[in-house]
Figure 1: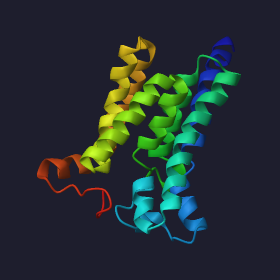
Figure 2: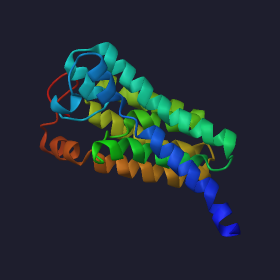
Figure 3: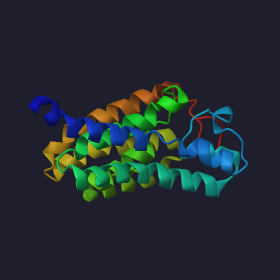
Length: 201
C-alpha cells in the first residue's frame, strides 16, 4: 500500500503533463478559425509552422503560444501540487504533444512545447533556447533546423547554468525531437529542405 502511495504522485504528474501536452491546438484552432484540417495541408504536421501554411498568421502565432503554454502549465500545476515531480510533468507534456492519443499518436514535433518546458523548469535555459531558435531562424530561414538547434542548446545551457538535474531530461527530449525531425534531417543532408514560407517541412 505504501508503495502505491509513493508512486501515485509521480504517476499523476506524468498523466497531468501528458493530458495537457496532448491538446492539439493546431488542429483545434484551424478548425475553429475556418482554415480546415491542418493535417491535410502542407507537411500534415499540427505545429505552428504548418499552420502558417494556411495563410493565417494569427492562427500560427496562437498555435505557437498555446503549444508553449501547455508545457508551462503542466510544470506549474505539478509544482504546486507535487513539488519535485516537475520533470515528470515536463516529459509527459512533451510526449503528449508529440504522441497524442486523440490523434492516434500522430502529433507535433515539440519545438514550441519544449520552449515552454525549459522556461518553466529553469527560465535562463528557456531564454537561451528562445534566443538560439530565433537567431537560427533569422539567419538560416529553415524552421526545422532552427528548432533542432534550439533543442540541442537546452541540455548544454542547463549544464552551463549548473542545473545538472535537468541535463538528462533536456537531452532525452532533444533526442525525441530530433527523431521527430528525421525526415527533415534527410532533406537537410540532401539539400532539399525548404526555407521558411516554402513547401512542407
